[in-house]
Length: 476
Image 1 (cartoon, rainbow, N blue to C red):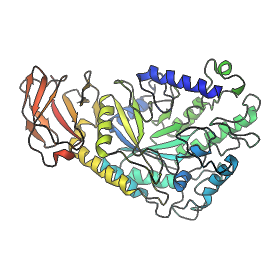
Image 2 (cartoon, rainbow, N blue to C red):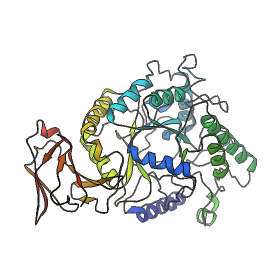
Image 3 (cartoon, rainbow, N blue to C red):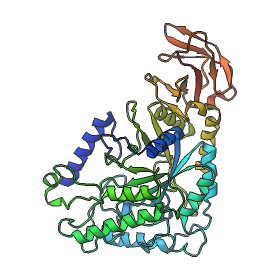
Image 4 (tube, rainbow, N blue to C red):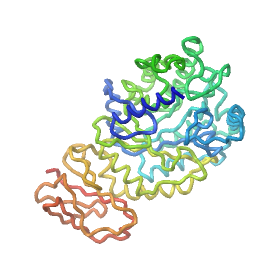
């Protein structure tokens, strides 16, 4: 219990220091720009994209539970577990799902099409979550979709199918990979209990076992980036607690300290860049040269940031498919995307396909409505950069990369009729210049008043369904 309290205090202090907002998981506290020119170029391209899809899909989808966290013996409100089943029995039952997970309607092309209709430009797919179940044809483990109930299907190498389908639609391709692996005997050793998410043996006393684990994940990552799966643009490494020791870890954690979980990221990164020189490496929450962009989870920094970052936020309450999940409205997602863009980030929206391999109808319906807004207003989102003045109440500002245009995006209250006038303070059009309403593509009347920039709005059909209005004008 003492260890958990210490960890929580560290987490709280780190997140508050970052931006005044507490995120679900620890967030890195500094940023190091990559030195490689090709990586900087890729990073700039990624920042243009703004909107991506994060896909969680695996055994937990078959069970309809919160990803793989229920096999971790941590007691948290967000980790539900059947209390009538003994923990070790629960884990064995979970592992056995490999024999029933058979997504016969698996259709990644439909996923890619739905995302493209939504205006998404990159994808991050879970090749392996913390449970260690591999969604690709790894040679390092038999615990994979290519060895289970789906093994005889020609589409059984799910990651390859997903990457190829999304690549055909022009997406930037990202591979999610969990550094911790709870199925591996090199991480969770059956010789001991599994009290929490960490390795359950002393690395100090068992260096051979930890070195085998480092070799294991090195080989798996090499399988993903060596060209067999095509060009991988992003390596998205989750499980930030697997990291080198920090000052005071041993003293702070006492007997619970089991040794630095250092997996030798310099060696991994060198290998990855040998195969994919421009790849973005995102070692989540671990500050330094191997976190090419930062990833606050389920939250948005309270202020604008001028270094690359991405908020990962699920469309529902959970990342993977849960039958009773409740999904955010299209307006809520669009408002979130607008705020994130104005603050300098990207939005990676979490989607959970059903166990049969199809998307829930509620998901495709929302993606389509989000995309309808972006079709007419996306100019204010894509290929933009931050402005010194970025917000006034419900109005957010971005600018074109060349700095010639300013965009004002007014988030509207959901279900309410459109007002006759909008007013904001901050960015002003150049005197005598036109202001264009992106929704109509036509000029609107505006004037400067003591209250700010006042815009007169035309009558718009179905205005109560509009989540936001975007306007463009020449920078003053």
